[in-house]
Each structure stands twice: as C-alpha cells, then as structure tokens.
Image (cartoon, rainbow, N blue to C red):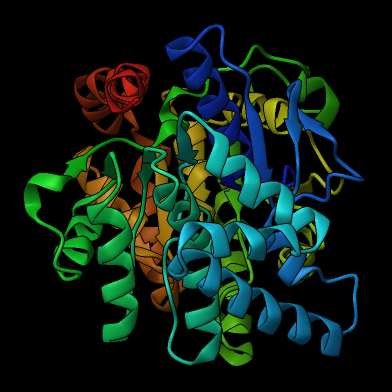
Length: 411
C-alpha cells in the first residue's frame, strides 16, 4: 500500500510516485500494489497500472464540494479517525465500517496490507493555526491506522517539518517511533525529527527518490520549441509562493535575469513543473506574468506536459534557474548546472549534500544582481560546476536506488 500520493500534474511528485512504485515492485515482484492519494479514483482509477482508491485526506479536502461541506467532512472524519485510532479494536472496526466509502477504502486497505509505504515528498509538516493541525493529522492518520493493525510503515525519503506546536511534535514522534523505517532526505529534517523526541538511531539519512528517475526521451524538444541543435537553451521554473508584493518583486527580478540571459544569445524557456488547478498551484499562471515583464519574450511551455516527457526538456538545457526543486533534480541528473531558488529547506539541504550550496538563493532574496552573480559565471564556464557533479552525483544516485533493499528489511 502506497499512501500520501499527490497529483500527476505535479511532475516532481509524479516522478517520486513512479520511482516508489518501481522500487516496491523490485523489492516484492509478486506483490499486489494499491495507491491511496489525492487523485479522485473516479477520474484517475490508476497510475502506471496500479489501482488508485482515493484517500481520507482527499475526501476531506475535496475542492469540488462547498466550503461548509468540506468543513463538515473534516470535522466528522477528524472525530472518526481519532476514535478509530484510540478505541479498542472491535469498536474501532465499527467506526471504520460507517465511514464514507472513499475514506473506508483507505482505512480498511492500510489495516489489511502487509506493508505501508508513505511515498517521498515534502508533506509531513504543519503551519501555525488550525490548518497546520488538520494537515498533519490527515497525513499521519493512515499510518496510525496501519500501526494499530500491526502493519509496518515505511516513510520513503522525504522532508520533515516544520512543526511549530508541541502537540504536533508529540504526534509526529509517536508515529515515527512506531514506524519500521523513517528516511529523511536532508539534515534539516533530521533535526526536525530529533526535536520530536525521536531517537537518533530511529532516523535514517537518505536521498530523494527523484535522483533515481530516468525515463526514456519522448519528444524532440528542440524541434518542438524551434531551437537549433547548437543553440544554448536555459530553463527557468517559477512558482507562486510569496505574499503579493514580494511575489511581484520576485517575478519582475526573474524577468530582468531572463532578459540578461537572452542578451548573451542564449534562449530561455519557461517550464511549468506543476500545472494543476488543485490549490491554485499552476506554474503557468506566474510564468505568463514573468514573460509579460520581459523586454524580449522567452519561449514558454504553456500546456500540460506528461511528467516523463518533461524530464526530457531539462535534458536539453545547458543551464537551469530552478525554483521548483524537482526541476533542479531532473536537471542535475542530466549533468545540467543549476541555480536553485530556495522556498523550503529541502533545497539548501540537498544542494549542500552535493557540495552545491553556493548556488542557492532564498526566494525572498531574489533580486537581479544577486541572481545574475550566480548565473553569469555558469553561462561563461560551467566546467567547475560539472566537475563537482561528476564527483558527487554517481554515489548520490546509487543511494537513491537503494530503497528496495530497505523495504525488504522493513517488511
């Protein structure tokens, strides 16, 4: 059972799910796989041939229903989930039987599984306020239900935290201390878990599964974009993240840097790493604004692109200025130098692992002069950067491919 899957229009999370399913298959070739995630099973019944059953979390947060109904669902599922975890088994099973069908499917599936794997990502976190509590509760609830039934739970390599409240840290600590394996993909996450009173020996340092994503090319991107084989193509990914005034400044400063890149004769392409309506998280919206700010129009990919096909576009770039961190990972694994714009601690942590920390700029500090100071040297001479990659990347990728052995041990 693979839980906490996201949506396929987020290319990074789709790649993580693809790798996770492949690694589970490698560990257990004859196993039946099931996904519980944020995609409606009535719309997406499967992912790469694996059945999707929806999830408690998706049902509670379903944006297609009215706000009052969502609030009612979250309240009732919160109460029912708490009862299912805390009551004696006979009463807990009775509670599960009266859950709505989608929520019941996940609750029963995790309780019957031989192994539950929470896929990699950056979703085990909380913010201040009620939303932070409800997010962490619904993320952890399937694991709590599995653990109550005696099913081992593995947290595939991911980021953890922040957890601003003591109650949140206690809940995370309880779940992780009872898990078969807890894999953190950077040192900051290790620190967050230690702050949840999880013994250091229970925490394993691991590598983001995106480094193991290597699909076959699907599209001739240079032909599709009208870029010649000898032309330098520079990719840019952006996202909505900041408060309106700061977001506008970030987008305008990125546009200034794009103009400077194109003044060198290179072509810039704006790439939507995420193109979903869910939570309004569509990179094309802010990238259209960025293009409008540019003096010379960059190329744009303005359609939804399959996550496997998108990897091939990063392969064609000579440089990436990446806000979405899995766009950075997709590029690094093709030997493409990257300047990473940091919006969560995963960016700096993983870049530091690869000895690339000097090419990271926090998103709130993006101004053209600072960004250009990182970009211009890579346009002129990428060889030193590539030498660091050649030294550090092979071992890192090998660690990303080691999860099947760990799954076998946990089961």
